[in-house]
Length: 103
Image (cartoon, rainbow, N blue to C red; front, top):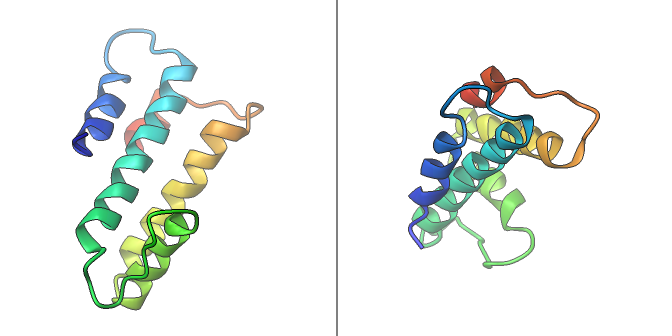
């Protein structure tokens, strides 16, 4: 699978009129997966990476970015992780299309 497919699907879900909240929430999750996989797949051979291709790699992506002094990117990934968790697990929150487009 091409990891950009996550990104493309995330954008596609936001197209059209009257986009449903489930599409907005799913879009946030797909974009998060694109960013996570992009970092992991493109940085796994870096000497400072500790990716194990399993549990813990999501946090490792953030920690890796911090170790290589990319704190701004680590902050963005942390924020996107929080939003993905909210979109997937907190059904009481309401998500508008603008929120997904911002991410």
